[in-house]
Length: 131
Image (cartoon, rainbow, N blue to C red; front, side):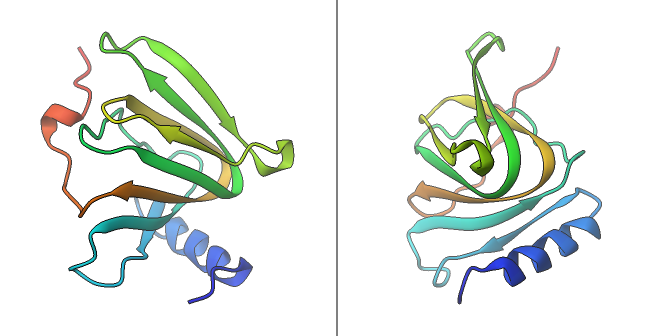
């Protein structure tokens, strides 16, 4: 598979028909693949809850668009903000294992997300519970 403008356009069009305003494309080679790789097409207005991955670092690379990746401490206080925008020469960020994070989508965007190990769904303990 070639990752090109046509594919990114198709993914963003699919995200526009999804009520969550985002869609992903699994890039693994099959169920036995012990890595996590996906393209994630995101539209402004999508809601990604504050969450964490306790056992793995997440690498986020922006292929198109503009997003802000936000990091939070254990008290829910924002502790870092990363503006990803290829037009500004900032393409990606590493999210440390256990770091609470989310993102804001400023324009139609496509990221590639990569994590170590086989896919493990996050639990309710790994989604920030707003008080």
